[in-house]
Length: 180
Image (cartoon, rainbow, N blue to C red):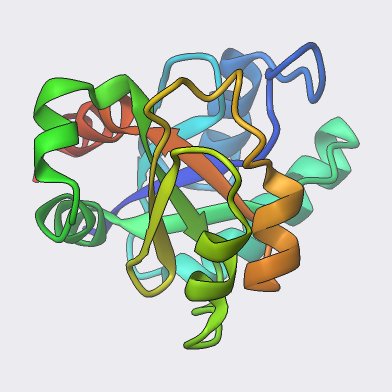
């Protein structure tokens, strides 16, 4: 079995993209996924995908959410082992221990250009720090995410790819929930 995690972008955040997690679980079960569960209310789905690849699951879940819920959003799927690898490669170890709520991992579909992270870091006006992790970015928001001028639009503009973020606490909970 292939345990995977699907991260829905912009679901149940700030009053937009309303999607009850019970409905998401029911849809995933109807699609033939096994051991389906959700974590929190922000679009974190964990399931056994059988032989389906994460890329195939992204397409399947996006199409199903569009059809069933009229929800147009990106969904980023990672195998449980990838989640563990993201945690292991964290360049901000101190921040993960001391202030995990202000450490975020941004999940993207593609690897940004080599110079994209340097350009993004140079554009940041606050104390935030960003490091590349391939299809992931590690971001520290020392003054909090709500006050930051480092927005999703800045990420998309400089990295040339959209993404969805999860804070370190959520990422650890997702890793634990995969049971791997």
